[in-house]
Length: 158
Image (tube, rainbow, N blue to C red; front, side, top):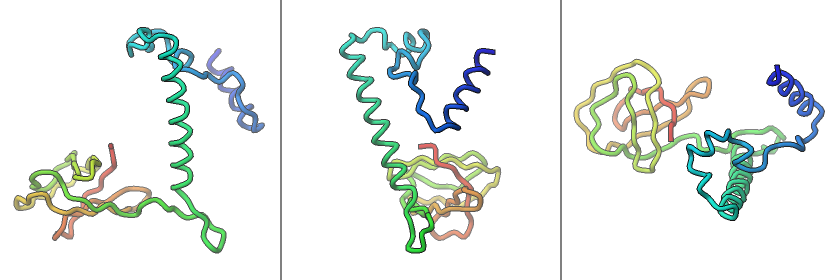
């Protein structure tokens, strides 16, 4: 019941465009005591905890602002369009033999993608082939290996 009441109150605050004055500020207020202890944060001094909270808050704001700024831009006609990269080009790390359901693709640029469909594709052994990942339908992504017309539907995990 308390959860429902909080949810309704939060919804009202959002609907009215007000900020939540009692929003948790630090990790101790955001985590349960068990989570706080399990993460080892209870071993930090008050100064160390304050420094960590300050860093998390500033990093969160910077990351959110950068993400918002880089996601969309206004066109000359006044419409918003995505300014995020439309394709990713990199090499796969190691050998490539194809994909088979839940294949994980580790790229040289540090990104990790996983296959999200059950399709299979067998390929002759390729060493560090170039790949292209491009937008698919409904927000999905298609991974294509250099020299092939086949593609795997993937999602980024890192």
